[in-house]
Image (cartoon, rainbow over all chains, first blue to last red; front, side):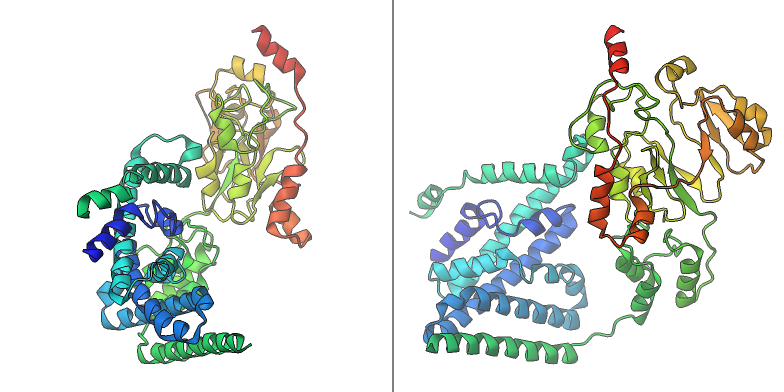
Length: 196
Length: 311
């Protein structure tokens, strides 16, 4: 039940983009068309799941025993950046098709604040290993959901008449803001009603 | 003290482990890349102007190398030399693009010669001004002179001349077409590099209207076509245009044009643009800031404003 709760929380209620406002640069930058948005979404999901698991390990195996939890942020950045680089190389070697789909987005998310954010949130909520992994995965799915919705909206916006000074990024930010308002409908109350 | 030592050691150790790990991984997992990509990247100008339709020079180089892009002549800034080199790398004979085209502003309107409808003091950007009734001059097909093209030009080929009119230095222009894209009134047009003169007007209104509101606007009198019959002048919609395929002399037309709107095709930039940049070693940002400040003051043309109120 906890896992379902975590998933609903991070996909809808605490959506990493529309509620926490983390990872806005890929959200705006890569949402121009659905294809690249989906690629980015899957890459983020992939990295977030791995990163939150790895950072949990670093936190519990290295930082806590030595009593240096205050180094969370800097070690997490180090771990995530190293991990993403490694994953990129492995994918490039093992599976060129997957590299083609995800590869160009991976360097973009090495130091993405959303990835770091979910690792820190998982630690702050004192999640266990599996819970951290699920939280990372769910946040990634939430990111995928948000960027997919955004890209479909932006593809439609491309054909609409938009005043010239709002074309491109400005109207994307306005759209994103309205989406965030809509996502406020997902409240903790929803979770309580669903699973008591 | 111990904590600090731990902190330094742990972060250092983690960094070292990851560094060494990645170094090993890059050796073990190295993938053979196409060496032609790097070679092509070296050949392309590296301006990342996007004239080829790709995100940058690197993207175009990659597209050529993996043969998803068959057209090797898309790099307009590079010109024939770059095309030739690309061809030699790819082992293909490539025909150079036919003609080098540059852009030029087809308007000489301004405070001194044109009638203004209102005084604009909003955002100093042509597209912002264009939203307001299509510009502050009576002539809606004129250069708005706020320099959106100057800011968008990747090589600083555009600037203000001595009279404060926007001009393109054709020797610096790399034909990327960004200024044409950004210009809301379409006064920025393609001209062949070897063109001697242009008709610096974009207005298609009847001569009566043009004469009233602009001293340098083309009135479609067709004197140019009569004086220089071989010059390729064609008058459509009261506006003279030049067919550059005809190479006859155009001096007589230049001389006899009543509003004197047939002018040399390349401009001498006074403010902004590449000349300033090469003479002073200013950074790009500073040069552009100067360009905005030094622009001739827009004095309120009281007379023209009262004219309009009376109308």
